[in-house]
Amino acid sequence: MTEVIGVRFKEVGKVYFFDPDNNKLDVGDMVIVETARGIECGEVTIANREIDDENIVYPLKKLIRKATPEDLECLKANKEKEKKAFDICLAKIEEHGLDMKLVDVEYTFDNNKVLFYFTSDGRVDFRALVKDLAAIFRTRIELRQIGVRDEAKMIGGLGVCGRPFCCGTFLGEFQPVSIKMAKEQGLSLSPVKISGTCGRLMCCLKYEQEAYTDLLRTTPKIGAIVNTPEGKGVVIDQNLLTGWLKVQMNRSPDAAPMVFNVSQVKVIKDAQIRVEREELEEFKGLE
Image (cartoon, rainbow, N blue to C red; front, side, top):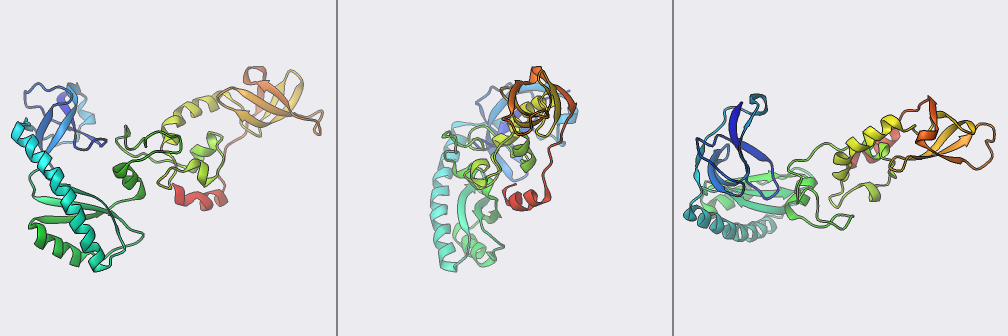
């Protein structure tokens, strides 16, 4: 077991572990630490606690100090410089005629580097742009191409549910989302209904998947052969959340299906949920 603190450098970003170096810190404290990018100022999101060594990525860097008022002023000044750098970079992108969309600008705490985040449909030759920016800011310049999910996380906005983006409020890291999840959750495979504002599959499909997987263990799938109080039949529709099933009875195939609760039926032969190759081809751009 090792004592650590968890530090986050962006409002909704990944939490990194650091050695508190015998300091007692509380959630919300601002601290100065050394990262792979250099000296950075971050917020403590996990107070001192002991965790298993297997959950730590070594070497574990030590806390440098708790942020001073001067450090916080430096952080505030960097934010102002980022706004100016954004406008300057926009003008230079237009000047060079580059097919790229600037999303965000970030100064490292020690001002040793300025990072420009952008999106583009293809590769961009930005060597001349970097040269111009380096001459203006007189520090290291890094242009980093990001995906549409990262763009949505940085800019923020409202999802189709009417609430702020999950990625911009509480999801620290993106996790893989697949078409199979949408199919297992009984959602319409329509890009409009299962994709977020970013144009990719909605993140909520992932963190709701565990509940649906649990329900699928006890609910006959569409196509399952079941025994009901009225005889044998085939499940043609289901509602995982309510537990109601529509069953087409074998004795009356042309009649309207009958409705049963999952507790009233017994599975004779369950079906499987498969994603066909055609579906994968059609929706692969959403994953």
